[in-house]
Image 1 (cartoon, rainbow, N blue to C red):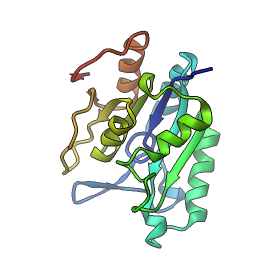
Image 2: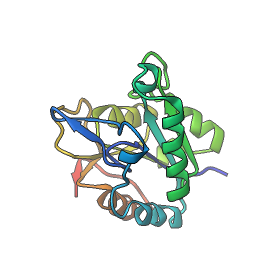
Image 3: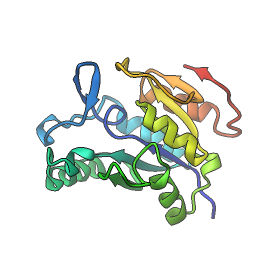
Image 4: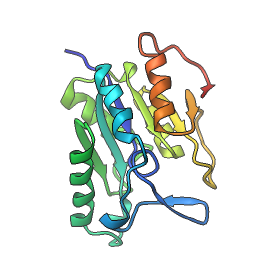
Length: 183
């Protein structure tokens, strides 16, 4: 069976990032790991529409020694308990073909779960997420948080938050033929 998925970046899409000098960073510990409001309800709407839900997140702070793998896993246990996720793909190595903007995490998940990438979505808040989704052949949604960085590739859509992105995906669910739209 060929499935559709929505791939979700973690920091800035599901949970609140730490902002320094206009750029987002992962929360340093579980005490600072806070989901955005309505995240669970938004993902449940996608689940009810038949989408698999897979987090695809770069976490270079683990490789840099700025965050422990135990802290990272505690955050992901929290995500699994709070949200209807089918998987969490993580890359800590900036030189890996799994590290966004490379499409490795999405390609591996597609092979593992029988996902049709051409009927799937990547939702992220940074240029790496948009480029990763494009490189994998997915439709892309940029959640614009107003960071001090520019996109490199154009997303298929730009939204203000995850619930708006879910609305957009569900509105284009049957035939996602879209070009440069915003909501």
